[in-house]
Image (cartoon, rainbow, N blue to C red; front, side, top):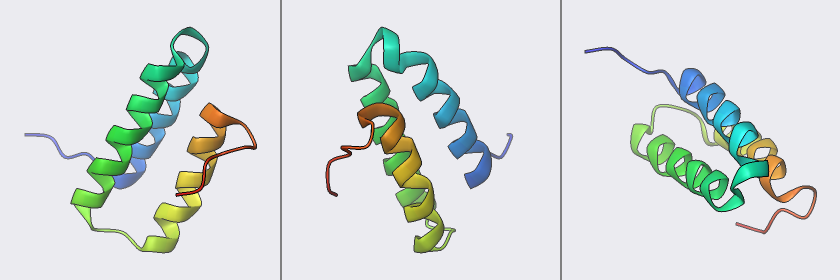
Length: 69
């Protein structure tokens, strides 16, 4: 069984969002939501790291008008 790190998961999510945001914004939002769920379950990172990564991923989907959490 392979292991996926927080950094790998975040990088993969970013690539997926970039691919989907033009074709299917709903699926891009879904990828972001899955990322949020998984990183919350991992609980192996500092909240500041999560918050720092969350904003750019949201901006890929919503632009500068990202909804408040």
